[in-house]
Length: 184
Image (tube, rainbow, N blue to C red; front, top):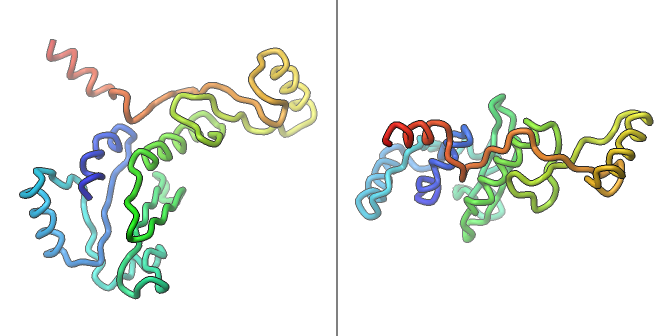
């Protein structure tokens, strides 16, 4: 909770809302949110859903009966604006989540969707993305010519382009830029 709270501004820059889910009660949430604030100064800026009977956790496969019938494993669900689960990351109880990788995954999903392409292995924001495969033989021939001319790929089946809009969580957003100008 603390790590996600500290990174919340990065998620906000990606138009992403964080939500916590816990099988603890709302009173328990309030107690540990308050304790976190008192001990660290960190405010939890996102809602935490109390799932006392574990119904939501079970529907999403967050409770592993192999481990426990009540303890949830550490899951991260990336759900798009249409309510479609795009990514599920499952961490065992003894392994913390990797916030930079979660942010990179969101950046990759948004870049791939906005640029109509796919991100390759080990992709980082603003690097080239994979162009979708041609659908016809004529498109294949055209792609082969483009790759030979521009040297932007291996062949017709694996070619690259720069993403159309490179937005990353580490870049200042428009609101921040406006605020900086107003302060000057």
